[in-house]
Amino acid sequence: MAKPQTKSETALQSAVMRFGDDAFRICYMHTKSGKETLTLLSDVFMQYFLDTQTFKSEGEERLWVLRTAHKTCMDYYAQKIRKKLTDEQIAQRSKDMPFETPKELCDILRLHYTLLTAVALHYGAGDNTRFIGRVTGKSASAVQNQLEKAKKTANMSEDDLREWVETLKTPDDLLHRVYYSVLNESKDPHFTANSRAKRLKRNVDRAVPFAAVGVIVICLLCVVAVRAGWFGTKYVRTPDVILESDTPVSSAAESEVSHVTLTPEPTASEDTREAVNMSLSIFVPSDSGLDQYSYKSLPADGAVLVQKMAEKGAFPEDVTLDALDYIKDGEVVSTMKSGEMLEVRLQFSGALQEYLDSASSTSSLEAIAKTFRAFYEAAGMTLSKLEVYSDGKPVTVGDMQINCTSLMYGELPVSAVLDGDTNEPTEG
Image 1 (cartoon, rainbow, N blue to C red):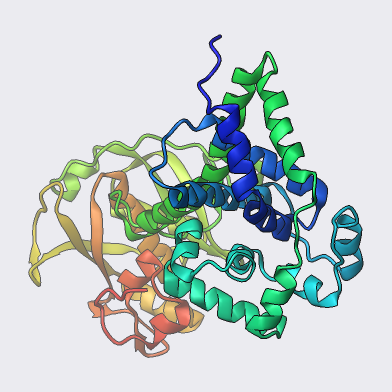
Image 2: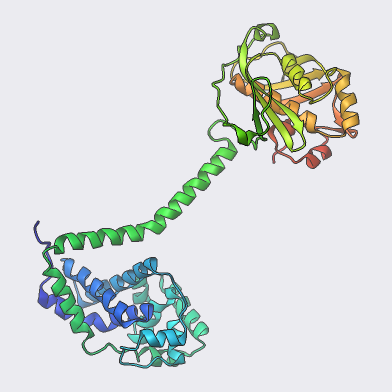
């Protein structure tokens, strides 16, 4: 495998000697460790050694080195747990450095990691906010805010900050060790593979936070889309499911939910639907909310659904469905075309209102609403509005008229539905 093109050893040595002090100060303030600073500096100048671009000026070259040092420090934080060190821990990590770490310097080194590069360059090298912004990818005003925050957090004046940051001197032999570390690594027979692997790992590490944010955003958008019905089906929180052929099991957790392909219901009259068997569900009130019973084959007839609900105890068996009216533009029509938004009025016997008066609960009405919604969805239709009548009058609970469309889609809690006084759908 061909060895990658690199800068000359002379160019590498010159860059290390000219820019090493400033890069050292950045790396040390982030790591607080001589050993880790050496590792990061070697990585910075290895990237410089492998980069064959020609710089227009020494200023552009210095900017490239310092920007790379800053990015390398950010990569360092991606691999390390950011823990706040004590004065004793900082002193222990810096025992091989040619300077002391008194409390004042420790307070500076413990500044938030996003402030350290700006502090190192402004107070250590005398760089202005515009240049620092080019290094860190921030605007000059953002850098100025960082410097103000650093002064406030460290509780020091600019002169004190400059005095302490300038004490961070590079060890005499450190830059030579960095230089020879890069040269020795470049002489490794596996240098090409290692350099490419490091570059790939660095790119992956930098991309992971953005990829994670992207996945989270996509997941949130999917949740919003499902709840808003962007995929064609409005989101509804369903009750616990009890699957049965004729007899319910003890709980939904004891059996797996199976999804049955639904056969579209032909749109014609009630007589035509009676000849069609479909996979249908009914809902029945229970102590825990609503139980759902799924039948693989039932006549596509609203009266049959009401009869099954009565058999399961949703209401007395003398409650019957006398008529099912389709409503369009406020008028009763005989048929509806396939694909239209259905508005349905259920005409029950007077026994339903008598039962609701004694029960003082909307649970039976909610069971009716969800049962008929599932009935029409099984036929590939959408029930947009539902009215429930008993003995020719809208049903009431506690003398309050009930919004059955809201019950059908679960858009309002029961207490809110009881307070309603219209049959118009209410947004949740």
